[in-house]
Image (cartoon, rainbow, N blue to C red; front, side):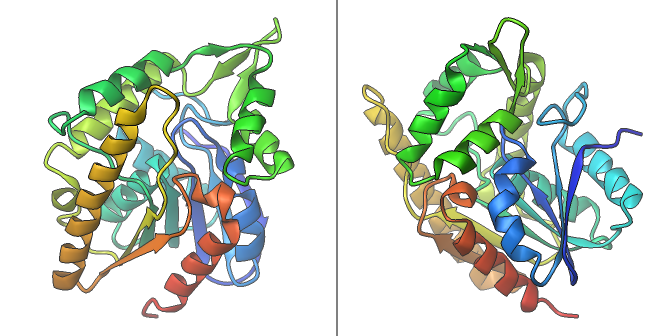
Length: 284
């Protein structure tokens, strides 16, 4: 049994479990969690290989789901609404699929991926693979805080989140997480799961789902304008597919937040409001 690192934010009411995105940690949820504790008991979990949780090998979605279930049992939280951002959103949906009796519902905040055959996917994959598990220079924290300011993320929030997502090295550099071997396994899992597209991926999930897209795209870095086009095209395809799916599956709700992919750091109030409203509307 592998138990994952958990932070108990406290609160009373329905149980919420918060999962973070790829290369991040549960600290990304600090601001939203502080708001959600007004009506919920809130736990956040570091995914394997991230934050303060142990590594696993191989890194597979079924294994991660089992470890989350064991961890929640150890913390006396057998039934919960599981809320995930990005990679955590994918895991939240898969947790609900595997545990319909334990997951009251799942919330996926912009956790959508493209199959290998999607136009432009090869270029995106090359960039992700090049940066997977790298050793970052000593000034990495400061650089990330400055970059976060472009999205209106306060410096203290950004610094706490970045520091929690990396491991300090003796020479002053930083090990980005997950390390390379696990990162490559994660990308393989995402390509496997989404090989037939986002809407097909959602087949067979019985629990109520809230699927949320970012309303704004990340601005492309200089020389990467092609990524902006890729991102916009993919977002339109996902939006069209989810809208059509929600018309035929009453357990699926679709929404959008006026933020980029970094929504739980950019607009934690909007995220908390959306999640709390969804939970209030669930059947008893």
